[in-house]
Image (cartoon, rainbow, N blue to C red; front, side, top):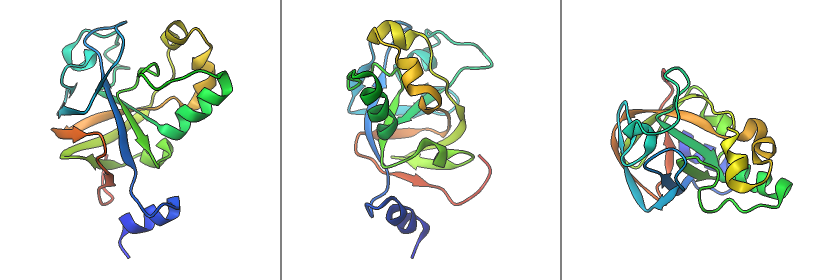
Length: 170
């Protein structure tokens, strides 16, 4: 049995994690826009997104090329605050189902033809509270997603599997 199959069985579904949604926005403060697909650019991020364009709120040390959050973490936060987060209000680029974000730590993985590497946890920002009118930052807490680095660019599509690369440096 391969490691991908084993991971899927451990998750209980027999299926690898899947990309459920892609969001980008052209500049800081604009609403996130759902996309059916996006081009990931090595060393930059997603085409059309504020971080790749340099038009987002960012700090050179704390910036992320791409952010990811799990669908399970979003569901938990929604239940805690009774708020909907299905239109990108979470401010993360990628939403993945069937995965705990901590499983990404120190790993490289493919979504579509792009290769990503885990960088670090992404704490929630106060802007979330302005967008939702709720204390969403507190509801997400330590489960607010992770920063990713684009190692190899490529096309990603909603529905693509997230496939871990064989162990190696991130």
